[in-house]
Length: 553
Image: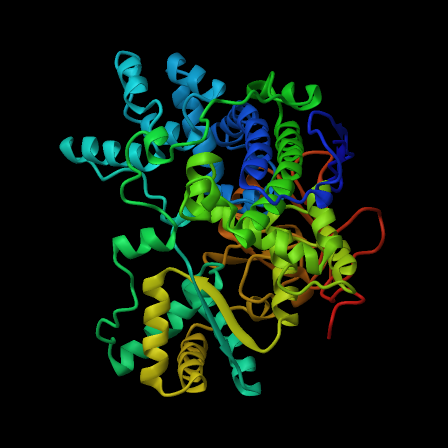
């Protein structure tokens, strides 16, 4: 199969090494056929692990994201790669650990042990014990290794294993229809919750803040029984208690032989000198590698959707798609669910799915567009995603969503929110109380007028900071710049003091609020104008706060 991977503003090479025709034409009626193709794609992903590990280690270890004018690894990872900072840190941590453990490293590269197993044991094994460690974990299920690692850590008095809650934790869906007034109050409550906390909170954390504010007046609810215990959580994820030993015993009747995987030459050579490369080059290579892997993700998502819809995992001996993804594909259940959701959205909005497969948009952009894009508007939304930062895109998506409160949250948060909703008597009362309380707090903490104008957040493109805000004079006050609204913009302390004044990683010119030009990182710099709009030429800066031309109103 030949597939293009494009990611604005970089040019796209042709990827070689992924065989077969258009992935949209692949139809699987038998579990073994789907399993075979998924394992082939998984081998390609496994071959990319060393590449991703070396590039991530270079980026994280040298803090190169700061040179590119990103305040945190999280902001960089979200904006440039479409992933969480936790994922990048894990790539770097595991690969640095494997550099000192040659036997484990070779086993990971050859596919003898999955990446999920390597990340569990790399912090425990030493050069003296790695041979015994390898023999212990070889051939075991991921859950079996988790049990062993947990026992070892508890015996040593350490915490019980790695906390996978953020990446792989169970989520439940909360969806509530809204009246017209509730549809107005919900976005207001989200925005105020973010201002009060000083962070760019996801929707479920905003809902938690709303419920907590109500609990401070009405009292916390008693246990509702909604939170599932450990055994029910495992059943919901499709995991079997008896599958904690050798995988060939847990799921007999299928071959566990490792398949070979290869990368195109232009991808395999990317990390050859990553430790010495400048920040812009490491960024380019990481984005190229991630765009290539999106081609793999796209096809895997299509096939996993078919396995989920037809229950093909049962034919292979797995009780659920989560168990199949984790043990067979070395993929977290949450990643599998996200790929399936994206594949389903792609049937409704094929232009969005094609843009993701080609690397024109990354994963976070695709999942944002999946919430609102349809056959008619998908192409316009994709073009908009290329023009603006992720935070601006998410704001515009939220503005176009139908009148409903919808989010995925941990079970305990969902139970808490629903319980407080019942105690408040109505959704409107719950939201109105939080909004009124936070508005009153805001009146007591009023600052510069430009803080309110700029939405109480840092105006540096892609920055999610909402605390430690400072008013920056575009024409420096020490050089005669006036203290007027058009000469001030809101920046977080890191962007203001370090990125702009100390290191010159960020440059700002123009007039606030709608005529600013932001230049991020060394040349060739990323350039944005007011409204988080990407600047491709030298046109006059103007506000970018407008929806896609054909998006639903």
